Length: 115
Image (cartoon, rainbow, N blue to C red; front, side, top):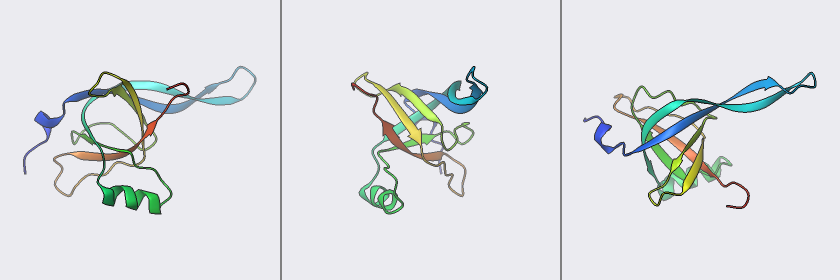
């Protein structure tokens, strides 16, 4: 099997949730930039969408990554789509095939208010 390197045609920022002091003695969740990854973003198959729906999730995009990409469940991937529109995707899971030539991340499109 061949590596997916040439097919990774987009660069996405990886934002990871963490906690920070809220100034009132508590903590709040914040997203911190971890770096960038090369990726290929596709729409999922109908079977993938059905499987996600059965588990109560909405799988709107599939992101393919290099085998060593540091992307985790809960991360937010930010970049632009083919038309240059800003796009943010929440990672629902990250899976690798038995032969580590790529990683696959089912994601959910995050629509910001006013978008």
